[in-house]
Amino acid sequence: MEAAILEHENAGLPLHCERPARSIRSIMPDTSDFMVEAAPSRARRENYPPVVWLSLFCLDAPIVAVTWQWLFAHIFGAELHFPVRILLFFTAWLIYLADRFADTIKLSPANPISLRHRFCREHMIGWWIAIVIIFILDVSLALRFLDLQMLLLGGTLAAICALYLFINHLLGGKWRPVPMKEKSIGILFAAGTALGVIGELPALSVSFGAALLLFAILCTYNCLSIAAWERDLDSAQGKTSFMTGWPSAARALTAIGYGLALVALASGIVWRFAWPLWLCLAMSALLLVRLNRAESCPRDQRTALADLVLLTPLIALPFSWR
Image 1 (tube, helix red, strand yellow):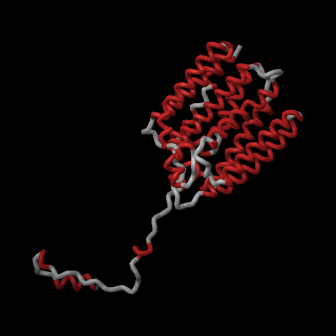
Image 2 (cartoon, helix red, strand yellow):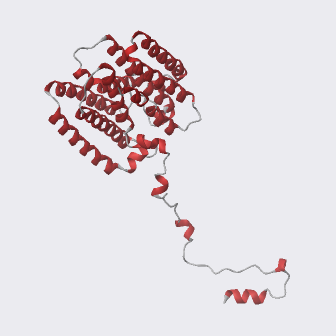
Image 3 (tube, one colour):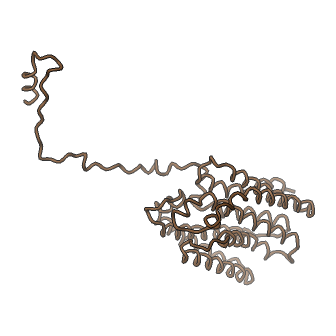
Protein backbone atom coordinates (compact mmCIF):
# COMPACT_ATOMS: atom_id res chain seq x y z
CA MET A 1 0.00 0.00 0.00
CA GLU A 2 2.81 2.41 0.89
CA ALA A 3 4.48 1.75 -2.46
CA ALA A 4 1.23 2.51 -4.32
CA ILE A 5 0.79 5.86 -2.53
CA LEU A 6 4.37 6.88 -3.35
CA GLU A 7 3.91 5.92 -6.99
CA HIS A 8 0.77 8.06 -7.17
CA GLU A 9 2.40 11.06 -5.50
CA ASN A 10 5.42 10.96 -7.77
CA ALA A 11 3.41 10.60 -10.96
CA GLY A 12 4.10 13.43 -13.42
CA LEU A 13 7.18 14.74 -11.59
CA PRO A 14 10.61 14.80 -13.22
CA LEU A 15 12.93 12.03 -12.14
CA HIS A 16 15.20 14.36 -10.13
CA CYS A 17 12.24 15.95 -8.36
CA GLU A 18 10.61 12.84 -7.01
CA ARG A 19 9.60 13.09 -3.38
CA PRO A 20 11.86 11.09 -1.10
CA ALA A 21 10.48 7.74 -0.08
CA ARG A 22 8.96 7.48 3.36
CA SER A 23 9.90 4.53 5.44
CA ILE A 24 7.86 2.84 8.11
CA ARG A 25 9.70 2.66 11.42
CA SER A 26 9.87 -0.78 12.92
CA ILE A 27 10.19 -1.77 16.55
CA MET A 28 12.40 -4.72 15.51
CA PRO A 29 16.13 -4.03 15.86
CA ASP A 30 18.35 -4.04 12.83
CA THR A 31 19.41 -7.61 12.14
CA SER A 32 22.85 -6.44 11.04
CA ASP A 33 23.64 -5.70 14.69
CA PHE A 34 23.37 -9.40 15.42
CA MET A 35 25.23 -10.78 12.41
CA VAL A 36 28.42 -12.71 13.19
CA GLU A 37 31.06 -13.98 10.89
CA ALA A 38 30.41 -17.58 9.96
CA ALA A 39 32.98 -20.05 11.17
CA PRO A 40 35.13 -21.42 8.38
CA SER A 41 34.09 -24.80 7.15
CA ARG A 42 36.03 -27.85 8.27
CA ALA A 43 37.18 -28.49 4.72
CA ARG A 44 38.61 -24.97 4.54
CA ARG A 45 40.30 -25.21 7.94
CA GLU A 46 41.94 -28.51 7.01
CA ASN A 47 43.08 -27.41 3.56
CA TYR A 48 46.69 -27.52 4.67
CA PRO A 49 49.62 -27.74 2.25
CA PRO A 50 50.53 -31.39 1.57
CA VAL A 51 54.09 -30.90 2.80
CA VAL A 52 52.96 -30.15 6.37
CA TRP A 53 50.72 -33.17 7.01
CA LEU A 54 53.45 -35.35 8.51
CA SER A 55 54.40 -32.49 10.80
CA LEU A 56 50.79 -31.90 11.85
CA PHE A 57 50.48 -35.51 13.06
CA CYS A 58 54.02 -35.55 14.55
CA LEU A 59 54.95 -38.37 12.16
CA ASP A 60 58.00 -36.70 10.65
CA ALA A 61 60.26 -37.21 13.68
CA PRO A 62 59.57 -40.97 14.16
CA ILE A 63 60.05 -41.60 10.44
CA VAL A 64 63.36 -39.73 10.53
CA ALA A 65 64.45 -41.74 13.58
CA VAL A 66 63.63 -45.10 11.98
CA THR A 67 65.42 -44.25 8.71
CA TRP A 68 68.61 -43.19 10.50
CA GLN A 69 68.42 -46.22 12.78
CA TRP A 70 68.29 -48.41 9.67
CA LEU A 71 71.29 -46.60 8.15
CA PHE A 72 73.41 -46.91 11.32
CA ALA A 73 72.52 -50.60 11.63
CA HIS A 74 73.27 -51.28 7.97
CA ILE A 75 76.63 -49.51 7.99
CA PHE A 76 77.93 -50.97 11.25
CA GLY A 77 76.49 -54.47 10.85
CA ALA A 78 73.85 -54.55 13.60
CA GLU A 79 70.98 -56.99 13.16
CA LEU A 80 67.81 -55.26 14.29
CA HIS A 81 64.56 -57.16 14.62
CA PHE A 82 61.31 -55.59 13.52
CA PRO A 83 60.00 -55.04 17.11
CA VAL A 84 63.04 -52.85 17.86
CA ARG A 85 62.30 -50.69 14.85
CA ILE A 86 58.60 -50.36 15.60
CA LEU A 87 59.38 -49.59 19.24
CA LEU A 88 61.58 -46.69 18.19
CA PHE A 89 58.79 -45.42 15.93
CA PHE A 90 56.14 -45.60 18.67
CA THR A 91 58.43 -44.12 21.34
CA ALA A 92 59.46 -41.14 19.21
CA TRP A 93 55.87 -40.59 18.13
CA LEU A 94 54.65 -40.73 21.74
CA ILE A 95 57.24 -38.20 22.93
CA TYR A 96 56.46 -35.72 20.17
CA LEU A 97 52.68 -36.12 20.60
CA ALA A 98 52.98 -35.51 24.35
CA ASP A 99 55.28 -32.53 23.88
CA ARG A 100 52.94 -30.96 21.30
CA PHE A 101 49.93 -31.55 23.56
CA ALA A 102 51.62 -29.98 26.58
CA ASP A 103 52.76 -27.01 24.49
CA THR A 104 49.30 -26.43 23.04
CA ILE A 105 47.31 -26.44 26.28
CA LYS A 106 49.59 -23.73 27.70
CA LEU A 107 49.26 -21.37 24.74
CA SER A 108 46.87 -18.49 25.21
CA PRO A 109 44.22 -18.08 22.49
CA ALA A 110 45.20 -14.41 22.30
CA ASN A 111 48.79 -15.21 21.30
CA PRO A 112 49.96 -16.07 17.79
CA ILE A 113 50.12 -19.79 17.17
CA SER A 114 51.85 -22.01 14.66
CA LEU A 115 49.93 -24.20 12.24
CA ARG A 116 50.94 -27.44 13.98
CA HIS A 117 49.79 -26.18 17.39
CA ARG A 118 46.54 -24.89 15.95
CA PHE A 119 45.88 -28.31 14.44
CA CYS A 120 46.50 -29.94 17.82
CA ARG A 121 44.14 -27.47 19.52
CA GLU A 122 41.39 -28.34 17.04
CA HIS A 123 41.76 -32.08 17.77
CA MET A 124 42.52 -32.18 21.50
CA ILE A 125 40.30 -35.15 22.34
CA GLY A 126 41.64 -37.29 19.50
CA TRP A 127 45.16 -36.22 20.42
CA TRP A 128 44.76 -37.40 24.01
CA ILE A 129 43.24 -40.72 22.88
CA ALA A 130 46.18 -41.27 20.51
CA ILE A 131 48.68 -40.62 23.33
CA VAL A 132 47.01 -43.21 25.59
CA ILE A 133 46.76 -45.86 22.86
CA ILE A 134 50.35 -45.42 21.68
CA PHE A 135 51.63 -45.48 25.27
CA ILE A 136 49.89 -48.81 25.92
CA LEU A 137 51.21 -50.29 22.66
CA ASP A 138 54.71 -49.03 23.33
CA VAL A 139 54.94 -50.43 26.85
CA SER A 140 53.38 -53.75 25.81
CA LEU A 141 55.84 -54.23 22.94
CA ALA A 142 58.81 -53.29 25.14
CA LEU A 143 57.88 -55.80 27.84
CA ARG A 144 57.20 -58.49 25.26
CA PHE A 145 60.24 -58.24 23.00
CA LEU A 146 63.11 -56.47 24.80
CA ASP A 147 65.62 -58.23 27.01
CA LEU A 148 66.63 -56.91 30.42
CA GLN A 149 69.65 -54.98 29.10
CA MET A 150 67.64 -53.14 26.46
CA LEU A 151 64.83 -52.51 28.95
CA LEU A 152 67.29 -50.85 31.31
CA LEU A 153 68.91 -48.79 28.55
CA GLY A 154 65.59 -47.81 27.04
CA GLY A 155 64.06 -47.08 30.45
CA THR A 156 66.98 -44.84 31.38
CA LEU A 157 66.72 -42.88 28.16
CA ALA A 158 62.93 -42.65 28.52
CA ALA A 159 63.39 -41.30 32.04
CA ILE A 160 65.82 -38.66 30.75
CA CYS A 161 63.34 -37.67 28.03
CA ALA A 162 60.54 -37.45 30.60
CA LEU A 163 62.77 -35.28 32.79
CA TYR A 164 63.47 -32.99 29.85
CA LEU A 165 59.75 -32.67 29.07
CA PHE A 166 58.99 -31.96 32.74
CA ILE A 167 61.67 -29.26 33.02
CA ASN A 168 60.77 -27.72 29.68
CA HIS A 169 57.08 -27.38 30.49
CA LEU A 170 57.70 -26.52 34.13
CA LEU A 171 59.65 -23.51 32.89
CA GLY A 172 56.97 -22.82 30.31
CA GLY A 173 59.58 -22.80 27.55
CA LYS A 174 61.43 -19.98 29.31
CA TRP A 175 64.92 -21.44 29.22
CA ARG A 176 67.93 -19.32 29.90
CA PRO A 177 69.38 -17.79 26.73
CA VAL A 178 71.80 -20.66 26.20
CA PRO A 179 71.37 -23.44 23.60
CA MET A 180 70.26 -25.88 26.30
CA LYS A 181 66.85 -26.67 24.83
CA GLU A 182 68.01 -27.17 21.25
CA LYS A 183 71.10 -29.11 22.33
CA SER A 184 69.02 -31.35 24.62
CA ILE A 185 66.63 -32.24 21.81
CA GLY A 186 69.46 -32.98 19.39
CA ILE A 187 71.38 -35.20 21.81
CA LEU A 188 68.30 -37.10 23.04
CA PHE A 189 67.03 -37.68 19.52
CA ALA A 190 70.39 -38.99 18.33
CA ALA A 191 70.78 -41.19 21.43
CA GLY A 192 67.30 -42.64 21.06
CA THR A 193 67.87 -43.36 17.38
CA ALA A 194 71.15 -45.20 17.99
CA LEU A 195 70.15 -46.99 21.19
CA GLY A 196 68.88 -50.14 19.49
CA VAL A 197 71.98 -50.29 17.30
CA ILE A 198 74.30 -49.92 20.29
CA GLY A 199 72.59 -52.82 22.02
CA GLU A 200 73.36 -55.11 19.07
CA LEU A 201 77.02 -54.16 18.54
CA PRO A 202 79.78 -56.19 20.24
CA ALA A 203 81.85 -53.04 20.74
CA LEU A 204 81.72 -49.36 19.88
CA SER A 205 84.23 -48.08 17.35
CA VAL A 206 85.68 -44.60 16.83
CA SER A 207 83.90 -44.34 13.50
CA PHE A 208 80.55 -45.11 15.13
CA GLY A 209 81.17 -42.49 17.81
CA ALA A 210 82.13 -39.89 15.18
CA ALA A 211 79.04 -40.66 13.11
CA LEU A 212 76.76 -40.44 16.15
CA LEU A 213 78.35 -37.15 17.21
CA LEU A 214 77.84 -35.63 13.76
CA PHE A 215 74.25 -36.87 13.71
CA ALA A 216 73.60 -35.22 17.10
CA ILE A 217 75.09 -31.97 15.76
CA LEU A 218 72.89 -32.26 12.67
CA CYS A 219 69.79 -32.68 14.87
CA THR A 220 70.83 -29.69 16.97
CA TYR A 221 71.41 -27.67 13.80
CA ASN A 222 67.89 -28.61 12.71
CA CYS A 223 66.45 -27.34 16.03
CA LEU A 224 68.46 -24.11 15.90
CA SER A 225 67.25 -23.43 12.37
CA ILE A 226 63.61 -23.84 13.38
CA ALA A 227 64.23 -21.62 16.42
CA ALA A 228 65.59 -18.92 14.11
CA TRP A 229 62.56 -19.10 11.80
CA GLU A 230 60.12 -19.00 14.73
CA ARG A 231 61.97 -16.41 16.81
CA ASP A 232 59.19 -13.82 16.52
CA LEU A 233 56.55 -16.43 17.35
CA ASP A 234 58.47 -17.58 20.44
CA SER A 235 58.87 -13.99 21.61
CA ALA A 236 55.15 -13.33 21.22
CA GLN A 237 54.37 -16.48 23.24
CA GLY A 238 56.84 -15.56 26.00
CA LYS A 239 59.18 -18.46 25.23
CA THR A 240 62.96 -18.33 25.24
CA SER A 241 65.28 -20.06 22.81
CA PHE A 242 68.87 -19.60 21.76
CA MET A 243 67.70 -17.39 18.91
CA THR A 244 65.52 -15.16 21.09
CA GLY A 245 68.54 -14.63 23.35
CA TRP A 246 71.01 -14.02 20.53
CA PRO A 247 69.14 -13.18 17.32
CA SER A 248 72.36 -12.30 15.52
CA ALA A 249 73.45 -15.95 15.78
CA ALA A 250 71.03 -16.76 12.95
CA ARG A 251 73.56 -15.29 10.52
CA ALA A 252 75.99 -18.07 11.43
CA LEU A 253 73.62 -20.92 10.55
CA THR A 254 74.73 -21.04 6.92
CA ALA A 255 78.40 -21.32 7.88
CA ILE A 256 77.57 -24.02 10.47
CA GLY A 257 75.74 -26.06 7.84
CA TYR A 258 78.60 -25.82 5.35
CA GLY A 259 81.10 -26.72 8.07
CA LEU A 260 79.06 -29.76 9.12
CA ALA A 261 78.83 -30.97 5.52
CA LEU A 262 82.57 -30.50 5.04
CA VAL A 263 83.41 -32.50 8.18
CA ALA A 264 81.06 -35.28 7.09
CA LEU A 265 82.66 -35.51 3.65
CA ALA A 266 86.14 -35.50 5.20
CA SER A 267 85.06 -38.34 7.49
CA GLY A 268 84.09 -40.27 4.37
CA ILE A 269 87.71 -40.13 3.27
CA VAL A 270 88.90 -41.53 6.60
CA TRP A 271 86.21 -44.20 6.96
CA ARG A 272 85.30 -45.11 3.42
CA PHE A 273 83.26 -48.16 4.37
CA ALA A 274 80.62 -45.80 5.84
CA TRP A 275 80.45 -43.46 2.84
CA PRO A 276 76.61 -43.66 2.51
CA LEU A 277 76.23 -42.40 6.09
CA TRP A 278 78.69 -39.52 5.65
CA LEU A 279 77.03 -38.59 2.36
CA CYS A 280 73.57 -38.52 3.97
CA LEU A 281 74.87 -36.34 6.80
CA ALA A 282 76.42 -33.91 4.32
CA MET A 283 73.32 -33.81 2.09
CA SER A 284 70.97 -33.14 5.02
CA ALA A 285 73.24 -30.34 6.27
CA LEU A 286 73.34 -28.72 2.82
CA LEU A 287 69.58 -29.01 2.44
CA LEU A 288 69.14 -27.27 5.79
CA VAL A 289 71.45 -24.53 4.54
CA ARG A 290 69.20 -24.17 1.52
CA LEU A 291 66.15 -23.89 3.77
CA ASN A 292 67.85 -21.26 5.92
CA ARG A 293 68.33 -19.17 2.80
CA ALA A 294 64.76 -19.73 1.53
CA GLU A 295 63.29 -16.69 3.29
CA SER A 296 60.33 -16.53 0.89
CA CYS A 297 59.12 -19.96 1.99
CA PRO A 298 56.19 -19.76 4.48
CA ARG A 299 57.28 -20.41 8.05
CA ASP A 300 55.09 -23.45 8.69
CA GLN A 301 56.12 -25.11 5.44
CA ARG A 302 59.79 -24.40 6.09
CA THR A 303 59.48 -25.92 9.58
CA ALA A 304 57.89 -29.06 8.12
CA LEU A 305 60.58 -29.32 5.44
CA ALA A 306 63.31 -29.04 8.09
CA ASP A 307 62.49 -32.58 9.22
CA LEU A 308 61.81 -33.95 5.74
CA VAL A 309 65.30 -33.00 4.55
CA LEU A 310 66.65 -35.38 7.20
CA LEU A 311 65.20 -38.32 5.26
CA THR A 312 68.32 -38.59 3.09
CA PRO A 313 68.94 -42.22 4.25
CA LEU A 314 66.11 -43.15 1.88
CA ILE A 315 68.49 -42.24 -0.94
CA ALA A 316 70.99 -44.82 0.34
CA LEU A 317 68.35 -47.55 0.49
CA PRO A 318 68.81 -48.76 -3.13
CA PHE A 319 72.55 -49.22 -2.48
CA SER A 320 71.87 -51.51 0.47
CA TRP A 321 70.75 -54.43 -1.66
CA ARG A 322 73.53 -56.92 -2.07
